[in-house]
Image (cartoon, rainbow, N blue to C red):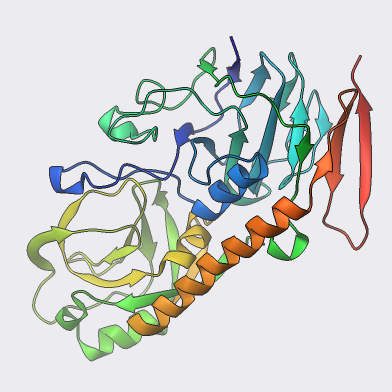
Amino acid sequence: MNSIKILKGGLFTTIQDKGRWNYQRFGMSVAGAMDHFAMRIANMLVDNDEYSAVLETTFLGPEIEFCCDEIIAITGANMSPKINGEAIQMWTSILVEEGDKLSFSGAINGVRTYISFSRGLDVPEIMGSKSTFVRGNLGGLEGRKLTNGDEIPLGKRELSSKGSYLRDKDTPIYTKDNNIRVVLGPQDDHFTDEALETFLNSSFVITSEADRMGYRLDGPKIAHKTGADIISDGIVFGSIQVPGHGSPILMMADRATTGGYTKIATVITPDLSTLAQMGPGSSITFEKTSVYDSHKIYKEYQNKFEDIKKSIKENKFEFDKNLLFNLNMFGKGFSVTVREIE
């Protein structure tokens, strides 16, 4: 059977895809990958559907043994990936052989790393998704993070003889200080003018209370006109709640479906992946944008994926069955290192 074995689970490794959509009205969290850009590119590089299930690992990666030949891609945070102790390149297709072991260290930059598999992770879909929602004990592998000794079956797809890579110009650079664009509302009218000015002209630091559900921010207090409570309404990925204590909370992938605190603003979709790669101690400034401009930015974001997809299809290289290719696409030149398979 095609499968992978989890020798070490890493700090927090789960199975994620696009998420569990159309069930929030029943109280079910969407979940799904925190960084959709990294997930989509990882899948493109192994010729999968962009939203196929991948492994998402946080801060410290897992150790995986392959029980079959496979093609993988690793994107997102740099956790120094290695095959059998030898460094491999990220953001490119990698051919691995049965018995090979993939390992990681702690994150050098960014927070979350994504691993895609050309055969796909063969776990059940629940409500149209394979995503793990740990708080609900649902999806993925038994609704939990991966632990030592887990075995995950892969599909039966025949391996391609070709791989590809992401161009240097398209590869994100992760930093700890970022400007995040937001659309004000839906309850920005519950805040004083001074509070809105403070929100848009201050720096906020992500506290240690930061996970897949949300990030608590430390910074100037945001004052309400009367109070923080509202009749509970829907919450989206990127909603920014401000409870009565005045410190904003960024709602992330595993957020609750509704909430009863005022939401001062909402992060635009293209900037959610930037947030996903920020951890405790990182600082954020918020920039106001209009609904019209946010739509324009989103269209440009989606068009970028089409351009990337085209380049990945054009920049194909042949795998050699006797060689493993470690392609370095990130310098001014183009270099290839090879390792013989005994």
